[in-house]
Length: 448
Image (cartoon, rainbow, N blue to C red; front, top):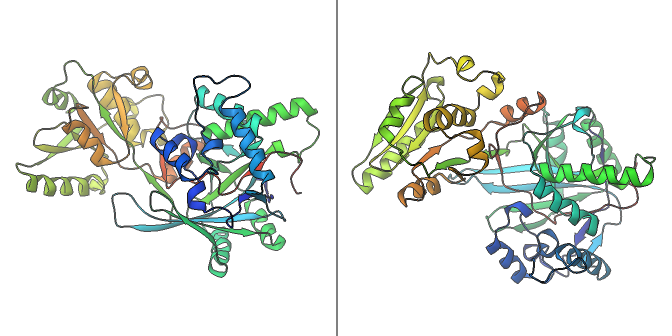
């Protein structure tokens, strides 16, 4: 069901530039400070294309999109970006420490072209909804530059790890291109043009369904570009370049596949009282406290609290709570709680998400924060690091922090394949795929 093709990627000439100076994190992860740092790193840094500066005097003839288009054309003409001689796929691995731990993992996948499919075709599945503003930005950039610089992150299911074995065989035999990014993640790339190897990958992927892990906005941008191409040409060429997008494919059973939690910090509540809140939750949630009186006690208390939050808790659902003072709390779903009655009109798979339990039961019922208020970002903020969420309370930037365990990969795929979506900011796949590792120029047609 998943149609995979090799392609002739444009890649930075490493004899002219150092990859560490020119590649970037995905556009939606680039802060203003990161943007300036990328600009300073090299005149050939991808930032000019991926997320360029805007200026007060921008005009239809000179703006962030036209400047990106100009840079693409200049760098190709100067052969800063050079196209590979033969179509291939690109084995891509990332070696990283899981944030907040001493655990080192390696995640391996491959970059290739994948056919862009409507969701109704039941080949590609989303796990979250998209917003219109990012799609408008990405489609305009794609129209002007004609290149895809960022990677779509697609999951496939291969319990036998047959494809991983093929990828690891390449990684063990050849010397890769390599760089270490600002998060101390080592990225390695192996271009492979061997037709027999490529055919093995294509055949192994042919019956797979795909779930978008990261890149929902870019995927739907590729869908829009495809539709524009079909309208322009009469939809007569199934191998037209616009029918495909550059994707990185990673097995759901990959040893290095990692999802981090996204914690919630809550503020702007006019009359928040922790004791009243805790009593309001008593019919649904038991609680345990981890008190401390000194900095030394606090260090030990948070260690015990974190261990229990991340543990099994005898099969009971757990959410961490901190509102300042001298204790951390662990809220555990009561054994007799009837989630079907508490969370009606919802699939069992979604009821199984801690983030749903938090939003529907604790935020809505316990604190009166509706889904509309969450969407408007009136009361709820987000932190990836637990320490940052706790610090927000200590620094009086928030009144209470809710600390979560990560969503499991199986939960993501089960909900997506069932045609449903998770709440916003439920998943944080780590690490991110670097932009500019390979670049797809959307022109002509792909290799059959």
